[in-house]
Image 1 (tube, rainbow, N blue to C red):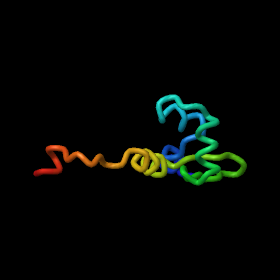
Image 2 (tube, one colour):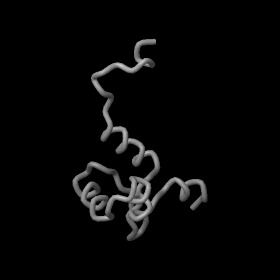
Image 3 (cartoon, one colour):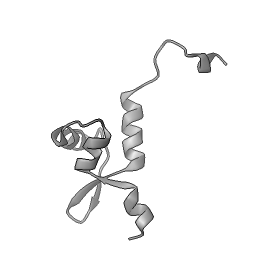
Length: 72
């Protein structure tokens, strides 16, 4: 498997660290609920960088208060 693809995949433990140190059990819970998408590599559960970014974006919707960038 090309190294570029592997560098875009994170283990559950690395995903937990990248999410600010949440527990791995929280990550497993989000994976089982379908809130966070998983990629299976053999028996390993991995999270793609794009799926991690989408999860973070979904957890942080834009606020109702417009920012200066929104007004421009």
